[in-house]
Image 1 (cartoon, rainbow, N blue to C red):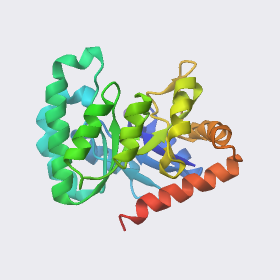
Image 2 (cartoon, helix red, strand yellow):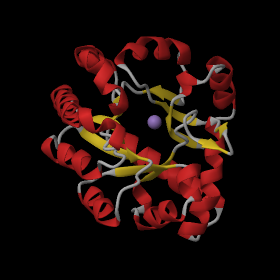
Image 3 (cartoon, protein in one colour):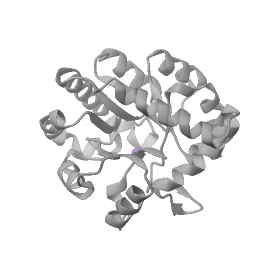
Image 4 (cartoon, rainbow, N blue to C red):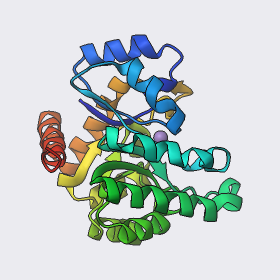
Length: 244
Ligand code: MN
């Protein structure tokens, strides 16, 4: 199973959950929310074949943490994975939107300068802004829009811009989410949990709960869960093949 956007360092018992996820054979992209978390999260994960750490600066933390952009640039050459970065256009973030745009543009330019990255992006209420930023930095790497929740028109634009998508159980529980996934190119879809933030019935998802997404995808794609699993594995392989 593949959980390509998980804040695994933010569980209270992170060490035990990393052990269990690894033992279950999960492929995980452990995204981080601040450049200061990079070193600690790398140490926490240790040397594991199927778990990778991404260097991030979450847009909702940009107002408090934008001074850490140089630190992100400093660590950038150590990894090919960047995330979580992006834009949040929610009403609580309106005051920092211009700053968020500046930070995102600067990070994407740094990615271009360092060589292409695999980038997990937040785009809540700001899909067009994220796509604009990506089009301004076409050599930043391969963007993966996580938990995409924009309009169908924005989805079309993102697809044309070469974006990938990571989709999870909570998104797939909603009819709107399923409709969007239906319209995504199946060969550019990965699964995610966005745990521990993402919850079902008040309970944080675990990385292995990503399996819940497989049954939804089986219905949407009209395939067996086993075929879904092999499609997703194929997608992951294709994504990484560009970077070897
Ligand atoms: Mn997230």
